[in-house]
Image (cartoon, rainbow, N blue to C red; front, side, top):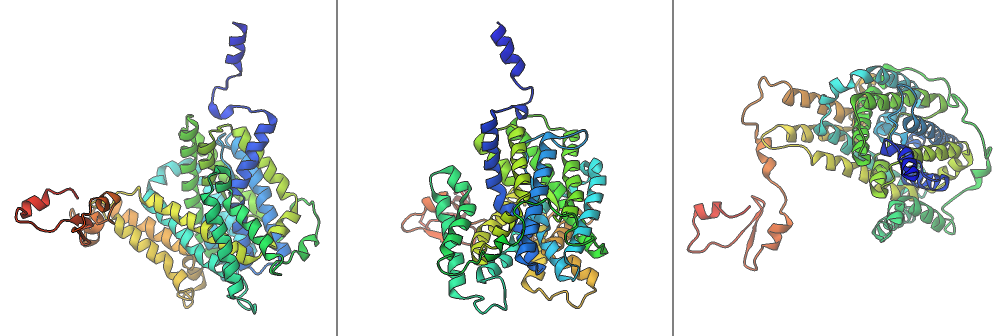
Amino acid sequence: MARSDRRATTTPARPEDERLPLGATFGYGFQHVLTMYGGIIAPPLIVGGAAGLTAAEIGTLVAASLFVGGLATILQTVGVRFFGSQLPLVQGVSFAGVSTMVAIVNGGGGIPAILGAVIVASTVGFLITPFFAQIIRFFPPVVTGVVITTIGLTLMPVAANWAMGGAEDAPDYGSTSNVGLAFLTFAIVILLSKVGSGAVSRLSILIAIVAGTLISLPLGMADFAGVGDGPIFAFPTPLAFGAPTFEVAAIVSMLIVILVTLTETTADIIAVGEIVDTKVDRKRIANGLRADMASSVVSPFFGSFTQSAFAQNVGLVAITGIKSRFVVAAGGLILVVLGLLPVLGRVVAAVPTPVLGGAGVVLFGSVAASGIRTLAKVDYANSMNLVIVAASISFGMVPIAKPDFYDQFPTWFATIFHSGISSAALMAILLNILFNHIKAGTPENPSVFAKGTGRTAVGDDDLADLADDGVLNRSVGRVAAPATEGDTPAADAERPR
């Protein structure tokens, strides 16, 4: 009886409050770090490269991102009054803001303008968290799917530039050796993803970067001479890139990113709550969002950017079945320690850019694929959602396909719309309101674009039914058998489609 009572008192009331042995806690926590490591270092690498920073300065950005991401993770998982969802969520620099930050850099604002925009936009985000549940209806899957897809697509030129060598003025830019190394890294990622081991598959990008770097060493394509320039252990220097500057256009474009980030984090909180099988109410979501925004406000003072939950780690919770938030908190502590080792940031910054390009093709492509998966949840039947998706993604691709498209516009306008993410997000939000919230003028029988939503690619079942003498009716996306004497239009209409 006593033993039974003891078991009852040690069983946590919530699944996420389970405490594992110390070794297992840090072991599983390290697995979370490895899963998201490639994603958390990519934004500072991209933004630092766009800003023309040195390898040492990019290393500082990477270290700051690890350090702040670790603190944000601990706040989100452990939680204090009003802050933190107390769920197993890993925090880190959000991909959502990368294209916008690059646009701010290209507009002449530099890193200080990015930091100022993040501070102001995150403060606004923090203030609206209690009311976000009221406006989240304006961010359904048709909007968030467009934004996430656009994020991945707008990052593909970055991956291509890395694959070619990174520096356009370099004599070997676009050489077969650079592109070949990128393709080899890409191939390693794909092959490792095919390996039967789930752990190896999940770490395929990180392992491929290490393997690609090792291959590049005897080829003379990697230079780690500068890794020793600077301290091994150091606390992130506050305002290492100067005092933040505040530009209206940069703030407006970053505010759009913050709204998208709030939406993504809300979705992640709900998703991980379902995976863990615990109660997630409006109060818990608000606490999680406040932790998100508070971390984002503080982040620029250490030289980092907006923080959000990492979706891939939500998937890892589902795969491993380890629901303890303390495991993820241990991962956050590991991130903090890594952030105190700027030498690691310099090592990352010294990785050959073609290697990063090969891995980036898969990494950024997976972001676009996540957006497409979200768009698959959208109801296109007899609605204008197809028009929203088509117009918004196309609008977002304009500055990517033609980077000088807005050069003749005022600087504030160009800063906002030169970001494909800002352009697509604004268009998706406005069109969603126009077609799905403002009912006046919306036809009962939508336009010809909506009428085409039933047209899909041929499915496996259709192909399986294709007879030797059958023909593929491409106009309707189904298999049509050759006409026989018994065929009639009515009989044809009754065939399964």
